Image 1 (cartoon, rainbow, N blue to C red):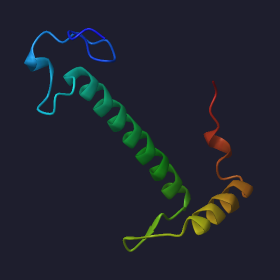
Image 2 (image 1 turned 45 degrees about the horizontal axis):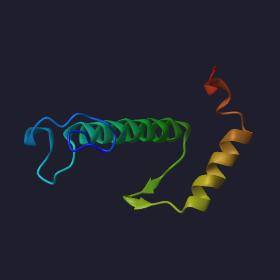
Image 3 (image 1 turned 180 degrees about the vertical axis):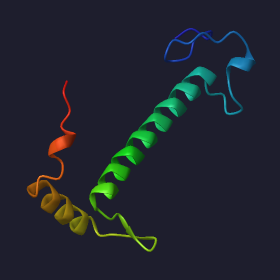
Image 4 (image 1 turned 30 degrees about the vertical axis):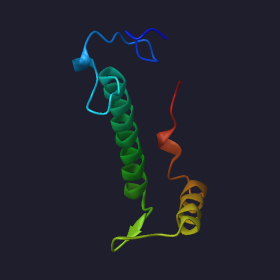
Length: 88
């Protein structure tokens, strides 16, 4: 890989194209954007489940995954999520 490109192919014209750790600024920005989008999507899913009655925390203490799965299964069996089907 030429010295004027990062491993992902972004052009490195000067030291300003790299952050303090030597990492490509565009790669860092892309990674941060993916991370923010992922966190936002996860938070949206959690909020939808919480509105349906699923608890992920009890007074700040995480609920056991088996309990969350049990509640999700009960809600699904009761048809709570029928109106949330996606169309592709």
